Length: 505
Image (cartoon, rainbow, N blue to C red):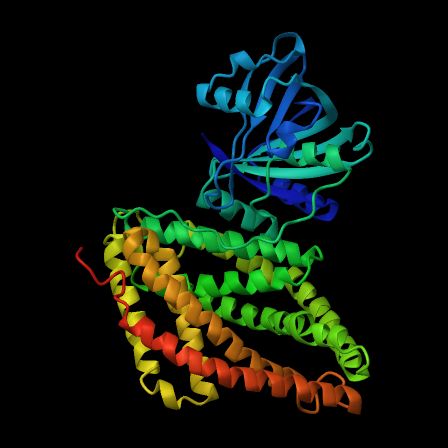
């Protein structure tokens, strides 16, 4: 199934795109109008599954158009499947793909389908200099819930680095818009809810690597996953998502940096270093908000509820909330800025091989993923063990350094674990995860002290709030000392566990 690159647009971005397309397009654009009649069950079975089935009239001709999402593979979305619809009536038996026909039948469960809203579409198509196409849709919705809504949407085909490069040229400051869903699915969702659905916070997804996969192919798959997590959470955070959005954005940026290091022998070069530097800087900015959110929601907020007679906790919580609101506003402005938006486009391009060293630009040019993975994980494990050599005598700074190294090791193990038998991977990764979680509570003490003490701390001039902050810091330090004893035992257990990559080829 072919695919393309979709971009959801607001009105100003849409006008900018049309202006730029008019200057770079080859010849005059083609224009036509379409009428879309959405088809679904009374319960909305197709919409709930993220599927769009549309009867499309262009001139006097009717066709079916089916958009069925596939597993994520970078920012690409599948192109619609089309087949004739004589006299504008639904005929699913004529769907040319037998597998899709069976899946559609199971999804509908013999429920009757009927009209579920309409849209009038004005479509404009430009031919681009490199032979691709840009399609711009202005979609006017009609129906009980969507009447009056206007959506604008663009798509670039064929998919690949050329489509991303065209998007960068046409919309250089709109990186988060790449990878949107198809216009048919967006319009169907809007008809059901009267507006586009809120962007979702995106957690990390496993990358299904194969043992015989090349290192270049594996690097592409991992980078696409990292880019998707980063891009989705930039969108969610800008749209007003709660504290989970900055958390998952920071995780995504850390995973990205770990992936760039992991495949350094394939990716290493100026662009790798630049993207890693951009990711590190952005993660630092996001981390400030994440730490404030976590301190408020996980520590000070519960203390304020548990001790309602202690006004200092309430005042401290209010001060943290105000500080967090200011940091969030600044961060949202930065995420909308040209630098972050261009970073998102450059990252998507890099995931498709643009900017890689020429020796490894083609798939299969590098050694196998297992060969690269064994060496990379062995280096990371060696460095971790070196940092933990004086485990029993570590100061706070050394503990923090080891915690970060354990995190990098875990991301690498998660990325490359599918290349090895599960029975070999599970013991090591499970013990690593438990140890990392304990190190997380150790870091809480340092974070509490950094956020809640000093002249610039929230409510530092409020004696009651300052006393509450002191109690929080003291409690975190006491817990950290208890957990440090546990961490020592967990480290010894992990060190005795055979690394899953240290086995027969």
